[in-house]
Image 1 (spheres, rainbow, N blue to C red):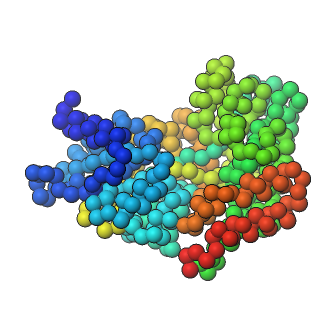
Image 2 (cartoon, rainbow, N blue to C red):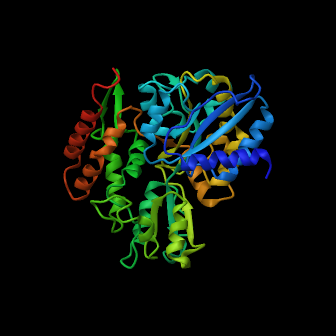
Length: 423
């Protein structure tokens, strides 16, 4: 192992073991005063060790005036860690954050405005909307898209064949019709838990609605809009074509385990769920197919919630120029393609989607990601999710309650969590 690889491995090992914040940028001890060290925080599971080594070696070879110190952190509890680090003069220079977390970090102060670089060097006009839009706050770009993941439909090929369905549905109506044929008493047409609010969000966006709207700096819940109610009505029709619980979400019980029993025709999940399904039921290996969540018309997949990460730069870093170079490299085509192939992610730009065309699950995910969205870009949105009124609303409507009345009540609770913020 050469010296560079020993240093990378040591850095990673220290990161995994660390329980306290570590110092950030600075000059290498005893090194050239013109050489910078950029400290990068990445999250566990976002990139493999092999990718980190490849990137570090490749980047340092192309930038002989910059050394990288890449440290890996756990997602659990990362919010307070990042908030604390952003206040430190020697904090990390580049940080991977969840795409929906950017606004809260900006609002409390601590991120560099990257609007100029995004427009001039990073091709922001082609970014996936579900990554680019939540990285923007009050007209400025702070988060640069890194990678995306979203839900698709996983289906049992054997059950589709038995029902005479030769092609995956392309429209919502085709989807309802096919699912009704699959829901035949012996099998469930679809397993859709009653509180899968991420999936509901996509249906609402397809109809032109939203979970909350901002006007003059004030956020208000909008589940009671006619468009949002149409999205809930479609969810109700689809959910009825299976035995998903009305009062639980997709993890209670884990839907992969339910699908693995072999009598469920479809679930809505990330493609990687197939690994868990096959581990529980090896007989399903090779029998799981994928298609994008259908939209209202055949030409457009349905809107989906986009999960993933953005890259941000700590405000006031002494290594701003070097940190931006790191972000540009990680977000650039070369390393985007490498990361997508390594981790089965969707690249940050629509034009890079062919990179993952060889994997059916990721290709379906990429098709949906082109119409991806994120949750309302309020710094207080986490308070909505902490005691999520959308879930309770869904369960009540599925149990027969008046949708308009329950939606208005849920919108009020969303407004209470978001009101008087950001004015």
